[in-house]
Image 1: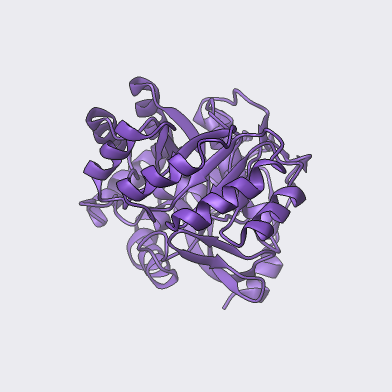
Image 2: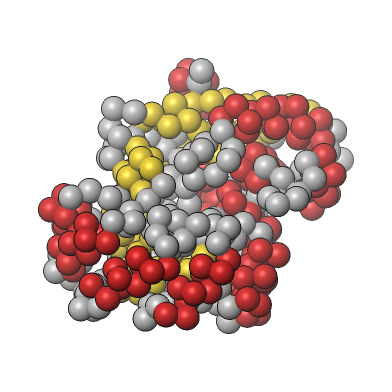
Length: 371
C-alpha cells in the first residue's frame, strides 16, 4: 500500500496586484507581499500532492510561524507512513494532537495538509478531487469581484474595471457616512449586479442600522456579512431582527457545530464557507450540510488564495448550490498564482477535471522564491 514518506513546507512571499483594505485592516498593497505556506507531500512511489494556505493574522489567529510550526512539529509526524487516502483518519489523529476547544485546532495548518492529501489521493486514483468528494454538480463557477475600502471615487473606478464579474463584494469599515457614500457611488457602475456587503466585524448593531437606513435606495443589495464581532452572538441576533437585508455569518462560524449553534439561535440567514477556516474540504462539506438542513444559503469565499487553494475551492464549490457568484479573489488580487492549468474566461472559472487538484504547480519557482 502506498504511504507518505516526505512532508515539505515552503514560505513564499507573494506580491499583490492591487491594494485591498477590509474592515479589520489592510490586507494588501502593491508594494507589499503576503506569506503563502505551500505543503508538498510525497509518497514512497514518487507521487506528490500540494496544499497551500495564506497567513492573514488580521483575519484569524494563525500566523506564518504558527502554521509552519504546527505542520512540521505536530502534523508531519502523523503523516509519515500514513495512507494518503485516509483523510478522515488524519483529521481524527490531528484532533487528538491539537485538541479543538474554542477553535477547531489550527484549521489553516490542517487545511493546507488536507488539500495536499486530496491532491495525492486524486492522482493515485486517477480522479479529480471533486469526484473523491462526491462528484461535481457544476462544471463552471461564476466569480464575484472583491472591492476593498477606499474613497467613493476609487471604489467606483474599481467596480468599472471589474465589469466582467458577475457580482460585487463590497468591503465596508464601520464609518456610516463614508460607507454610505461609497455604496451610492458604486450603485450605477455595478449595473444591477448583486452587491454583497462585508463589514468584517467593524460595526455594532445600532450603527449598522443607521447605515442600512442611508443605503435603502441602493436596489441591488443582497446581504450583509459579519457586521459585528465574531464573538457577539447577541449582536448578530439583534442585527438580524432589525435588518432589511439577509445577514451572513463568516468569522463567527468556522465549523459545522458553530453554524448549527448560529442557526438554532437565529443569528444568520446565510453562511460564508471557506476551506481554510473549516480545516479542510470534507469539513467544509459538513458545514454545507448543516446549512442545508437549517435552510441557510451558502456563500463561497477564500482568503486571497494562490492557484492551489483556488483550484481546491473550485472542486469544493462545484458540489454546492451557491446564493451568489463565488468570491475567490486570488486571481484578482495577487500578482502570481504559482500554478498553470486554471481556466478563467469572462470571470467564469472552469472546475478542473484532471486527476488531483488538476493544476500544475511551479515547484521550481516556489523553491526559488521560498524564504
